[in-house]
Amino acid sequence: MDNVIQGLKVEREQLIYALKSVHEADHAQILEKKLELDTAIQWLEQIDLLQLHPPKDYIFAKLPETKNAFSEYKIVETLESDDPRDWQELKLMHEEEELWLYTGDWVMKSKK
Image 1 (cartoon, rainbow, N blue to C red):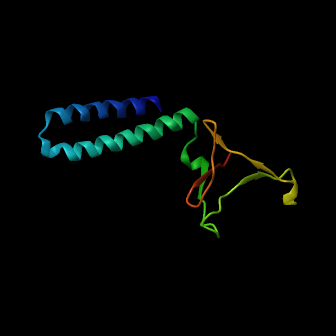
Image 2 (spheres, helix red, strand yellow; image 1 turned 180 degrees about the vertical axis):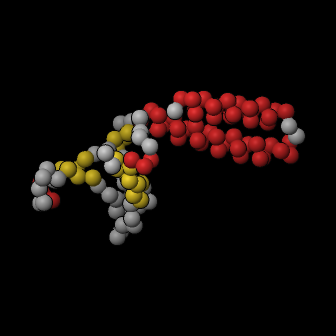
Image 3 (cartoon, rainbow, N blue to C red; image 1 turned 135 degrees about the vertical axis):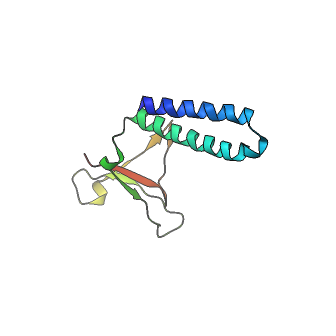
């Protein structure tokens, strides 16, 4: 993945150079390409950091609309019980902040 990321960074630098040397009329198109490369690089770096497998190894699901606009989704550990009273909520954290799941959020599950 490093080679691909580095290649995109080289292409990004070429676009930055082009922004400095082309007519202002061409800036919008070049800037759009640069922003697309920035996004691609950020995604690939995150994938590399998390050591994710190829996308074919995952199932992606978008959380559906809730019955109430103020509802959120919870993840629970069932503790091998069908009784919700036995379940324990899993608190998702990111940088010491609790994450809440809402309509439209995505869940990714490994097939392996």
